[in-house]
Length: 120
Image (cartoon, rainbow, N blue to C red; front, top):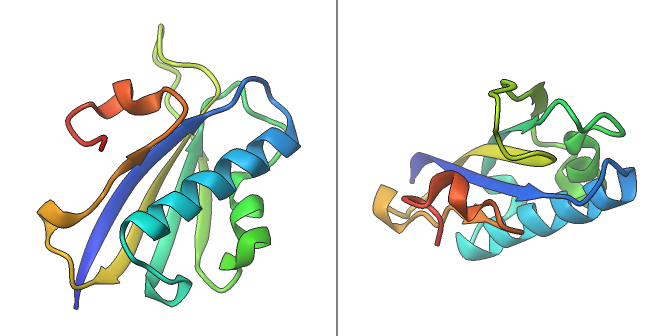
């Protein structure tokens, strides 16, 4: 098995902990499903959130969905003028037999424009 990195993002309508939880669980579940991964395949997960999301940590939602044994980290996204608001991004490091080209990067809720070269 090789170590790979998987990108993903999602957007929420407003800064609300329940909306963040729903979006993070949806994003992480879809990344795991699309790449045939289990939690034990994950090495670490980094989340970033835009500066307008302050109500909760994305990692708290990942822990609540059963990823508590995976090292999780949150950070604030660089506030580039004109960038998309209310976005949660992730970078997942994992063990997988998939090649780099076979990795499915997941962009939900209108975030595919962030990385149209990666979004599937």
